[in-house]
Image (tube, rainbow, N blue to C red; front, side):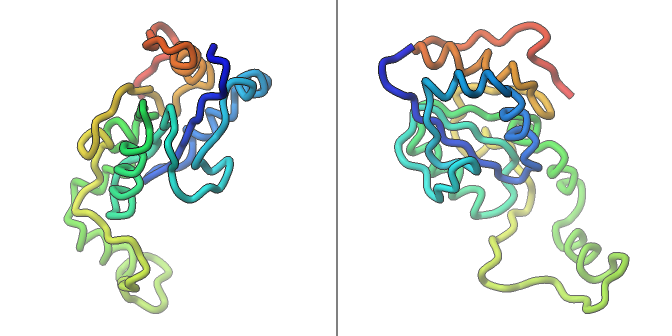
Length: 180
């Protein structure tokens, strides 16, 4: 391990935060890991912008212009960028909307859906611009490593991070890897 703490940034794009919850499932191993890492931008810190970091963990697919901005900010500031989970790697469940026209999805959700009392499609300029499709993060920026799963098991995060903390390439093998 290095003599200084490794900076890790995390974010969730179009996802469910399940990968972050799995990360927290490391339980007591997280306390040990905290001796070697510190968090930059992350839901764990509530820091809003990614500053220079050693490792960036991205969960979720890319479905808005804001997601593209965040992802590019991570690529610029993270020496190593990791796509975490099925949504980041393939678009996952959010990408199911790719089989339909975006306009049809919005109309179904906001005009024709069950329980709609004031049918209108939101158009506030403060809302992030929706993309035509949900994209895997690798379609937008270069990704250095992929951690599959929905979500990846907690021990898979350790299998990925421990070699990286030593400056080595992770060798992901065995039951820690699963594809859903």
